[in-house]
Image 1 (spheres, one colour):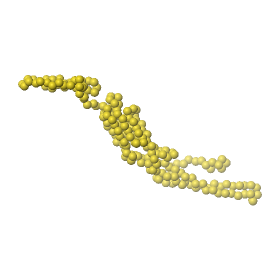
Image 2 (cartoon, rainbow, N blue to C red):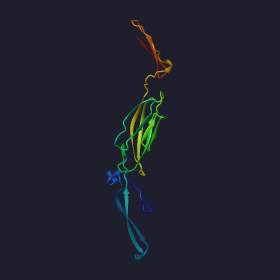
Image 3 (cartoon, rainbow, N blue to C red):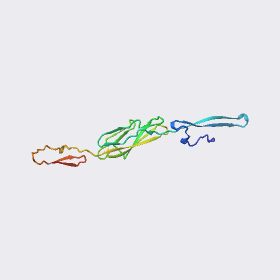
Image 4 (cartoon, rainbow, N blue to C red):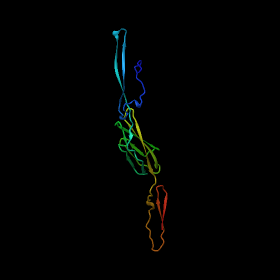
Length: 199
């Protein structure tokens, strides 16, 4: 207490909170403020005492209750995932907000924090690979605290062959007791031809 400037100051540590487990404001030490009026003469001298209560607050961060599992999805297909409302728990019962960071940057993926939803369509071949997702929950306390759940999204880029109508196989006539051989062409996603020989 700086009586000259009428100022309280000091550093509060977590140990100064009476009961940190609840995350609520707790009553700390009570101090007495004494104000004296010291005019000359006994009849002009007096004092008043006021008790000052100081509340110490410890904000506990949210905790991860149900971690988001790693995801594996095929390329060129729509992806949608909603993480559980019980993924995070806030000890003080405060509301939480969510943010998400994708590394490397995944422009194909959209995050909806209100509905807790990821969605998007990775496109071949650029979006194939493994993405590190950092999902962070932050409480609504004036001195906010947060926790981050990390998981991965693996986009597989192995494509199934597709039949190109321009290379459609034509019916073949085969004679009995004669050797048969035929070349069949399938167009791959990469633009390359795969040759299949039947004999």
